Length: 149
Image (cartoon, rainbow, N blue to C red; front, top):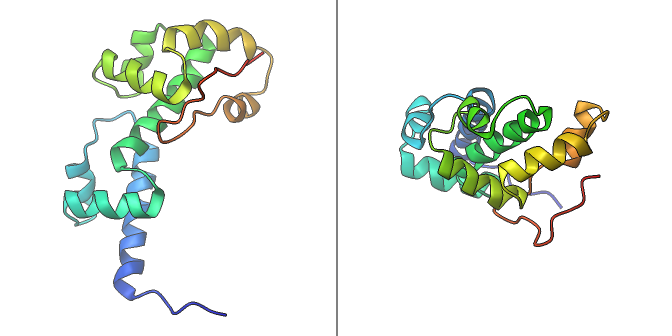
């Protein structure tokens, strides 16, 4: 059983959404907002937000924050930067927003994560550490924090 082909405008929108997602992945540390992202692909901000959520399961802002938190986790595991330095390095302008979102996604505050994860992932290849410590998306941090050791 085959599905009918997608209308051309749907495929065009999907290609635009992938370009937005790729831009977020590349430029996560830069100041990005939905209006600028939408302008870059010739969509309205509202249409971009609705279509992005339908295609990827979360808003462009949530996706951006997830990328930033993933990068922050890697920097915090290194242990050579403070939480504030990491916050600004990943493109967050507010330490409070960064800490709140980090805690929602990871389940512990950035300071606690920095202390525990740096030691727990020592000697582990970066690609393995990244996979093992990947944050849970869509604000679904586990209720009991996993033991990283």
